[in-house]
Amino acid sequence: MRTPVGLLSLATASPPYELLQTEVVAAARRLFETRFPQFERMAPVFETAGIHARQAVTPIEWFFEPRDWAERNDAYLNGACALYEEVARRALAEAGLDGGEVDALVTVSSTGIATPSLEARCGLALGFRSDAARVPVFGLGCAGGVTGLSLAARLASAAPGSTVLFVCLELCTLSFRLERPSKADIVATALFGDGAAACVLRAGERGFAQLVGAAEHTWPDTLDIMGWRVDPEGLGVIFAQSIPPFAARHMRPAMEAMLGRQQLVLSDVDRFICHPGGTKVIDALESALDLGQGALDHERLVLAQHGNMSAPTVLYVLDRARRAGLSGRAVLTALGPGFTASTATLLAA
Image (cartoon, rainbow, N blue to C red; front, side, top):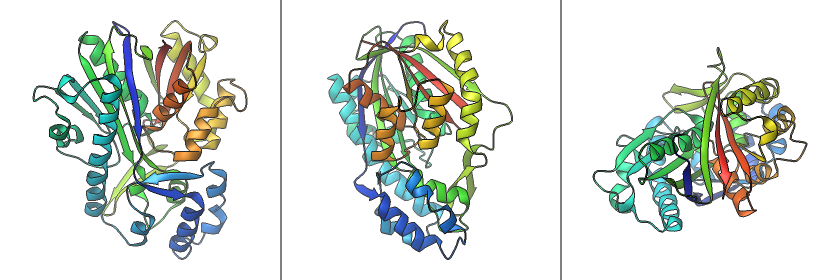
């Protein structure tokens, strides 16, 4: 990072429909028990997921009928545009700016197809300038909140004085499906929620924190761990390997290597801010990074209240951490398709 980049604001936004986990498991039993004979054997995942509620862009009844890709993507476009406008307005307001003062727009989303992309669809309503640079990014999955924030910071650092708006938004619930359900579909139904987060960044300013470094690590021969499968019903989740044991085995050496490239070691980090993919993933990260059981408390609370929203989730954790009094050096980290670990290093103001 040429110049430290200040995070001037951070906002989150959730869609309107609240899905209590008790309601979701009842609906899942109704929908899956005749289509997936092993459902009752897997049903405990709804209790062990650590989720009390999550939010969705459609009511739970929407999932009771088969939906094809066109219907799912229409729901994505409608829900995503509404959430994009809401979260972008909040982030800009906190920074004391309006849309016309934004020089570059970085948008991360992997749960639907939008061409033109979301920042273009919402640009008129938000007052974006016609010369604002647009950088839509697809395919990062759960790592998108960290990788996208780092990309936005690099753009800001390369043009000191410019203002960058970063928005990441995922509507994971739209991948819930009735057709040919798999074990991965049951796990996804137990975990996924919808949400959005946004930051305003500018080089050379303090903000509530400065982004001073970033790194990634992609493990070879791991393409099948996480991703999408594409079929006539749309995007269906792939979990070909169990992520918690993978994280427990491989996260520490990867983190040491990523920090090493910034001349840091694990003990230099005052707080790890992690993407809470699930309670077992949180446990694995605490163990791998020697954090101690229960250290990732903000992560557990975000997971309980919002579920796994993919890319925005880690920024919900960051928001909770800063409101609780973020200090010292923090490292944001998330795991995503690739299979990739992504980190961003922050110095709190």
